[in-house]
Image (cartoon, rainbow, N blue to C red; front, side):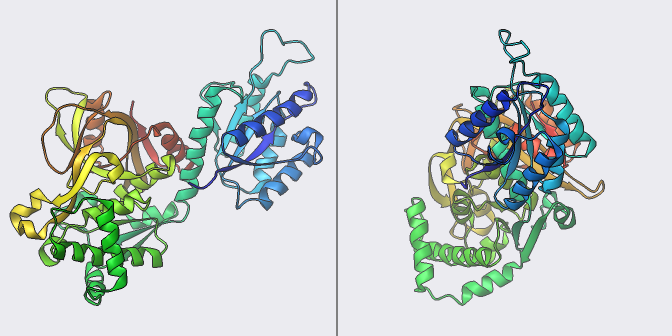
Length: 468
């Protein structure tokens, strides 16, 4: 995962002890470095203590940020004392960077409330936020109004804010590939390319026949096909799979890889049911699993907005995402359900997994045409779920996000599956059904719901439900 770099604004105000600004700058830069983040800030020679107080300071800060705009993923405003709200706002406005902004205010201590050491950051933070609001600039708040930069709580804030920055940056000019037509029986995965384009997300399309045509041109002994075959065999156990099915997978995988590379794609969504099985004789699940595991998410049934949810989760956590069905109730527990897919889950999701055949489609197209699934149980652990959808009638992108835990509850079934416990699950299911969301949901083995909600609700401006 690429290093996240923050532009740092150290607020200062002459009515208050400016020595606090000097220490505050030192503290925030040390904390960022120790937690693996890069920083760009005014030097001690640029302004008094490298802080921002006057309009002249703000111009210098803005010029520095603009010069390093390609490096800065987000801006942190730290207030060691009250700070100058105009200086902060001018720095942000004049730099021209459209990135997330975190506002941090250092707390006062009861034993240090004299004129020599009182901060008043508690109050100054409100003035900074007020000025940014007047300018129509969105910003992020710490969970506690004041929070020390050296605290464990602020370390978590930094981690979450970095996720927000990665999501916002990653969605700018994101490029997805739609491979094949939407499966006729799946109206649920309809979406609007135009609404996605308005948010900076492009969709490149290719007909499945073009993919098949490129496959036909490949010889069985092509070195690229052999290399892809080796990658498949190294990725998972293939002992149950016929050689001719593996060769088809290798060809299909190589062609998809090349098309994605040629078009600079961030993820793909692939037509499956039941064209690939009937007319080519494989399921693409393991190939999609491999892509998702390598942080090139791949979704089923040309579900582009499902892919978008996968990609957002991946940006937030830096780890692979999966696409699953909200599939079954679990016994009589209202807060548990079964998540399932055929499956194309990344192998890091599983306790253990191997390649097998797709049991559901096999009944209609024959077992020999359905090899290629990744089957196994999802390992227990915390997870974040996310779903995005385009609402054409309202002209908006909408989403929901929340967290739960995969459990060890007993379950004997097939495909890729797991039992998940989600607080107030019935309220979530009511929301999904009443709002007309899809049956697919993106999952990631992390806890990133708050960061995702902040990124897509506050900065992207999408309609959002944060489930709790």
